[in-house]
Image 1 (tube, rainbow, N blue to C red):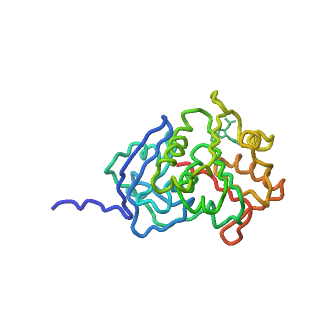
Image 2 (cartoon, rainbow, N blue to C red):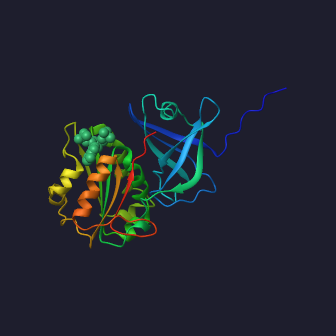
Image 3 (cartoon, protein in one colour):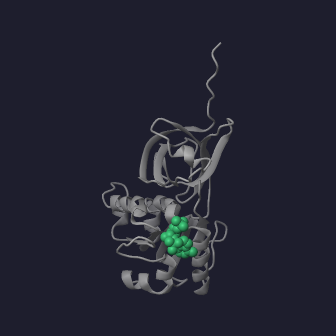
Length: 262
Ligand code: A2P
């Protein structure tokens, strides 16, 4: 008698894998037919663990809601239960993708305004990789400022490649126009713009570099995705100028989500 091959629940197929550094990579998988999500949301994905139990983690979807496939951007955690296995996936492999999207980094959680800052550190850029490919973002805002801070220059590559690809994207290019400003910074390796985004925001450097007025609850919105430290520091900056945290049920001036670590 032949042993039945276990069928994965919610199985999707890997269609692309790109390694950026020893600890950062992105991958794409087929999209579950039943999955509807808003750009900026996250879902649970994973693989079967050693004990034939699914090993799942929260991952922001980095692709926009209109995309036929799903993209994710991940760190490789040394000895991380999931990412130590996930970093070895290749095209044709199967992953578990649970089609239940949730999250706070959605456009509906913010009141209308002129300008939006998308502030990320590390893999926190993933939900914004989704949003900057969504025409809805460009329809809602006149100016979009994507701030990405990493320790080293090569950690900026995923975001840099993505931003550079937008202009020539047949679907999104015309929406982007000159609305999107990209503001990458590093904190440990020398680069054209150095410093933590929190400092560059509060000491007026970014306003000076991009010719922007000071943060104002009437005109500005913020989405933040990074470490707990970053999230709390930006929250304090927002609250200081009279901004309030928004949610799906009560839209306001800014929203925050922790970047997920596999
Ligand atoms: P720094 O090098 O000064 O710690 P990590 O790799 O630790 O997740 O950090 C990613 C990036 O986020 C680093 O450039 C780091 O700067 C920056 N960062 C960490 N905490 C904060 C914070 N509280 N405010 C602003 N930037 C932060």
